[in-house]
Image (cartoon, rainbow, N blue to C red; front, side, top):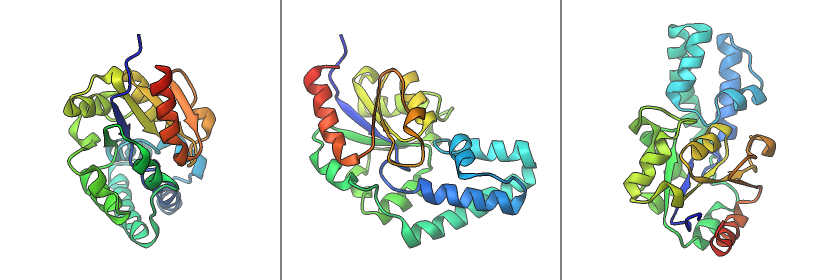
Length: 221
């Protein structure tokens, strides 16, 4: 028997804050500048949903450690500047949070410093303060299940009673590996087809999330 939902675990970038478009644009620009030409689709496939450390490893394997260090430093600077200029919450997200009555938390590949910045800029930080978990706290980032299992432990919830809201393929794979149901938000950069699969509900409008959660609670699926 499938357990009722007791906890909703939100990814941050691309789910709470509309930062993935900024990140992809910056990564494409850095690739052109530093010698690894990438399209937006390639950035989505290689980088979106993965930790800073995992991205740096890919750059180092391609361009060497020295260039990877420059890439990392430049990304942090350019991303922060763009966030300060233009970051917004994901469309419909504040209304969705207002309507969700279940306990919630955040589990992101980003660092705590990054989440304090992005969630703070969009007025969302206080909604999750004390319930924010980062891939820096676990041995393996997404698509490994470590981060979501860590969040469930910290929240005192059985993984089988958790649902994850994600917008990336590595995040969806991490939720499945953790034995959690997933909601794949396809309103961002990742195509819906890359989010589909077992135990996953794909949706395009964040305003519909509360109803989708209610339907699973009612149906017991």
